Every structure is written in C-alpha cells, then in structure tokens.
Image (cartoon, rainbow, N blue to C red; front, side, top):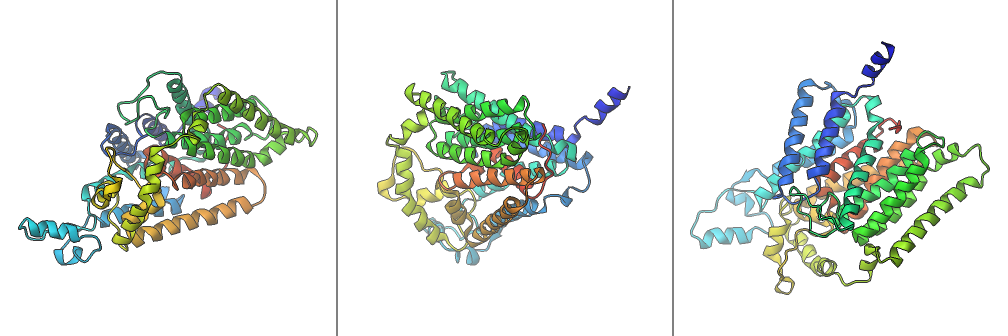
Length: 451
C-alpha cells in the first residue's frame, strides 16, 4: 500500500503531461518556419488546446514565475497586433516605403483605402499566430511543480536524441521525410526542414548531455552514456552538412565541459587530481579520432562543404546590401512582421533575380529591425541586455548545483543567438519552445536535473 501511495505521489501533473504532448507534437510537426506547411496548423492547434486545458484545470498563479520571459512574449504579441490596426490613408501614407502602395491605388482609379502598419497584413497575422507556441510553452512550464521541472533537461535531451536518430537514418539512405515539414529530399535534417536548424538542435544536446550525465555529482551509468551521446551528436552534425552547425557544435562542446566542470570535480573528488584533465583530454581525443575517421571515410559532409562553392551562401552575401538598403528605406517603423519575402521581391535588383527566392535575410537581427523598425530594435536590445545581465549573474555566482540550470539556459540561448547571425532558427516552432524553456532556466528555475 505504501508503494502504491508513493507511486501516486510521483505521478506527473497535468502541466507536465500537456508539455510532453506539446513537445512531442513540435518534434513531429514543428521543424519548419514557413507559414504554408501543414505542420503549422497541427502545432498551433495543439498549443491552443494545451492553453485552454491548462486555464480550465491548471494552477491559478503561473505569473509568479519567469515574469521576464512572459513580458518579452507579451511585448512581441502586442507589437504584432499593433501592426495590424487599420490606419486612415492620411496616416499610413506618411509611413516610409509606402509610396508604391499609394501609387497602385491611384493608377487603378481607386480611393486610397485604410491600410494597417504592416505592408503584408496576412504575413504579420501569421507571425502573431505563431506566438501561441512559445506562450503555451511558458504557461505549461510555469505551471510545473518543482518535482516535474526537475525532469525537463532529460526530457529535452530525449527529443534531441530522437531527432539525431532520424538524421542518422536519413544519412544511411532511408528516405524519411515528413508531410508536415517542407524538408528537402536527400538532406540530413532530422525532423527539421533546414539542416542548420537541425544542427543547432543537436548542438544543444552537446550542452545537455554532460549536464545530465554528471548531475548527481558521482560516477554511474549516465557518465559514459553522456560522453557517448556527445560523440554521437558531433558526428551527426558532421553528417548533416551544416557548416554553421559545425561551429556551433564546437562551441557547445566547450560550453558543455565548462558547465559540467564543478559536478565533474565532485564526481572525481575521490580520485587523484590528474584524473579530471585526463578524462577531458580523453573525451576530446575520442571525438577527434571519430571525426578523423569520418573525414577519411568521406562522411564528414559539413567539412566537405566548407571547401565547396555554395550558391546559397553567395546569395546571402550578395543580398546583404539590398537588405541594408531596405532597412534604411522602411525605418523607423519597419515593413511589418513576416513581410520579408514579398518586400524583398519589391526591392530586388535585376542582378539578383534567379529561379529560386530569397525567403529570409539569413540574419534574424537585421530582419527583425527591417520588420519592426525602432520598436523592434528596442525590444531586441532589451532582450539581449536581459540575457547578458542574467548570464553574468549566473556565471559570476559561486559554485554549486543551484547555478547549473541558469548557466545551461544562458548557454542554450547563446547558441541560438550565434545561429541567428546567419540564419533564422527562432522562427521554427520547436526552437521557439526550447528558447522559452532556456529563458525560464536562466531566470532561475530550480536546479534538479536528475531525469
């Protein structure tokens, strides 16, 4: 009877069950950023169901936790909705970059209509709708009791491993593609549509695995498992062909070792001092040996692509002057969230015309400024400033397990920030959810990563 009562007490709460369901849905259908993929309908529908279920039956005071993350999410929602408010002709014509719209109405003999701030309202409405995923994630994590929050690092690591295994099957020649994600056939991208986003997700595993493996402060079966996972993750990044992911993997490996330094010392406290540096050196040597074998076997696609001419990379550098010119043209209010593709086509010079289209600026910082102008810039600076301040507090604090989870959140967000310099990972629903979890860890979630 005592065992049954104990088991009942250990049952996860509703928030945790809903969070697992949401993350599972995101793992299956949340790996794309395009608005017209069918996976968007699935993940947003599940997110709304989770929100409604939690509001009706969940805890009544989730706003007591992680207030900063909620404020940033709320500010993003408000900014998107404000861009959809219709403005009279005399107002919106004063906005920079709208002359083409005014001329179109004049040439067609129509009266100037009321228009919203956003040049492409449907794209901005889609951007606002996409924010239900991070908001649902925040609401579910904020409603977790301490015993359930302790399972989060292991849960996220499990999804990283599952995506890694899908990527390895793709690398072996299995034609695994999801109808919910617009992945390129033959590309190693796991459950994502973009191999760079996939490589970023796997790089996060290089942070989580050491933290999970040494979380108890002693050596047991998790320790060699974590080391093996790090090697597996790095080799999968090599197989993905993502050159950016290769750099992220190296950064993640360094940060993962740094994060686990204290717990590794504690686990090896009964051994001579030379054991810790020897263990780290041995781990790095194993990684180097496997990477060398991968290169010799012509399996290191990411390294091979470093020496190949990439038309996509060439387009990013050629399109940068146009992107900067667009920012100047639409500043200080921006063109509207999600409007980059059609607005770029409106401003695209003839020398950049090609059969494929330039879907994003491939620098999310620049694209946010282009879309939202000075308001988005202020919000971006505030978010970066908050991350920097909280990160300094976490890393400058004393040793101890209670600081491990905030540092883990800081490092995970750092990887996303670095990846956003040359890509747009934060527009993917799965990465959105992981960013919210990492932000809540950074803000001070309790540290019990035993799962």
